[in-house]
Length: 75
Image (cartoon, rainbow, N blue to C red):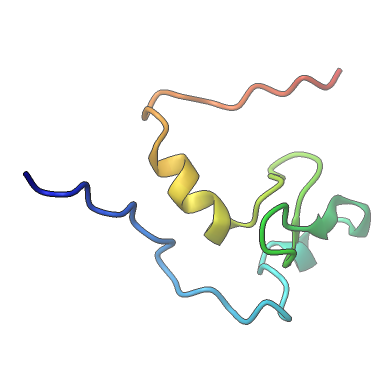
């Protein structure tokens, strides 16, 4: 029996933790905050934001069904 292969990583290697996620400078300052996992500054709030940065989210999103989607609970 073969072990399950690890999930694919983000297509590009992550920059050093001291550098922000490339999406952070493109969003409003109030929408940028540290990643929930690695603490890299990322686009966390508002349209298109996610609590984890793309590098931390890649293995989690890989486990979701292709039809899964995020539904905002905000009004």
